[in-house]
Structure formats: structure tokens, C-alpha cells
Image (cartoon, rainbow, N blue to C red; front, top):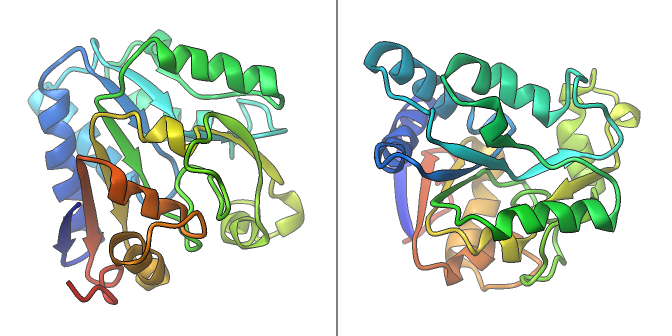
Length: 239
């Protein structure tokens, strides 16, 4: 694991963009993308670079990590909408080349996994949850798990309530998510994290034992992982 510690969120986003752009510059690559507050700054850097430097995404294909179960794609809080508003609508990517999982059953999961089997993700972008989840792979998820339906833990529902009028009752209780086994097939992984509330998870991911109790610790077994964090998220690291 290559761990890069930055001063703040903006510096973290800029450094993560450097890693992303190096891959994008090769052209005709496949990106695995994430949602949430952590990658927004990176996406803003991608948009700015596209507008100012003409970096093109016409040959890029994308596959998102996850989506809530039970809300329509045009819902303001769907991850499909999030990606359109925070990235896709502002770059020259072909909408047909963007893929966000959708569904509520085993067959939907298998269909998305079958799509992923036909490509090789060159760079998978991740955030990390306070409980160490990557994608929506909660503690206890097998490291071999492929795309699956997840029951969200109370802590994840609580963390996401801020997007649903701070009302936990409005937060979907399930998600469809790439599994840890799916994520680990990626050629390169880029994980971004910021803020004190992520410090314990970052420490456990980087320095703790590899255990399903800490899903992100599986990344210690991947050959090419870059972790970009701000000082607050790195606050408990000792190495």
C-alpha cells in the first residue's frame, strides 16, 4: 500500500486526481467509480481539467460500485443521479459507456457481475466507511463475495441520513454493491478518505490485521493500492 498524506481535503482531491489522470491519459480504459462526499473534490478536478485542458473521456467506460435498493434512478438521492450531477453531465463521456448497478435480487447482481466479467477495471476508486466498509460491503462480508444485495448496518444508515433530511427512516435499508472479490479484481485501486471520523478505519485498513471485521483490510492483499488521505484521516497512523 502506498499511503499519501495531504494537508487537507482539497490537497487530497488534487493528489488523487494526479493518480486518476495518469490512468485516464492512456485512453480506452475502464474506471470503477464511487459516490459519497469523499470523491466529490476529485470529480471537480476531473471536470476542471476537462474544461481547461480538453482531457477527453469519449473512450472511457465506467462501472459504479453500488446503488441503493428501492429508489428510482431519477430520485435526487440515487447514486445514478449523483454521478450525473457530479461528473458525467460535465465531461464528454458517452452515457452508454457509464454503468451504475440497479436492482433488488440475485439475478440483478449476477447480471452486473457478468458485465464486469467482460472488462478489466484499470482503476477502482474507493472511499471508506467509518466501520471500514468499501462499496457497501459491511463488516462480516466474505472477501470472496461478488456483486450482491446488502442489508445496511445502523451505523451506515445513520451516516447517510444527512442526505435524507437527517431522517434515518427515509434512508434505504439495502443496497446493491460490487463485492470485495469483485473490487479485488481491479488492476489498481485508489482510496480517498478525509476527516477525523475516518481515522480509526484508515488505521485498521493500513496497519491492522486482515479480517472480515474490517472489510477494507482486504486491500492489504492487493498488489497495487494507493491511499490518499488528509492529515485528520491519517491521525492515528504510526508507520
